Image (cartoon, rainbow, N blue to C red):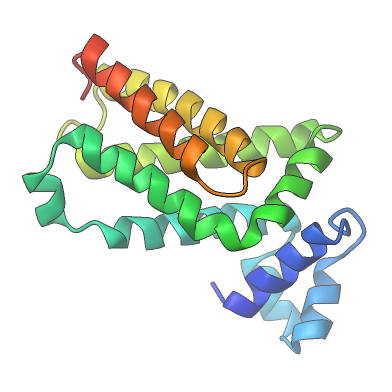
Length: 181
């Protein structure tokens, strides 16, 4: 995904223009081929989905398979979540505006939850040997809850300490009280 496209879309969200701006605005501003661009990103919802996939790919590339083999699963999962917060940090104000905008847009709320669940699933697949076990499905839901709590906290803090603490404490509780990690 092109960084200029990401920057443009999130600048519009940061300025409070998410509802108003159109894909054609981005195409014109960035001098892109409209037909080709709309094949890849036909609407703003697809942009959010593709951005989420793009960030997840970057996050997963930060931890190689040797790290996964030589570390505890809970530590790797915790690290993946923290890296994701760091990766999305440049767009914090835009994401906060999208959160606020989504309050009146149920479709956007559902899209956000689906995208975040897919992220958590990707991260759990990175650390898990049994890709479809019932434990991993339950773990996905637990970690999704942790992620949403941490993300909400992250939106309203200057640094990442409180959100990192939520992730750390919650993952430790899962490890202590279940056999999922």
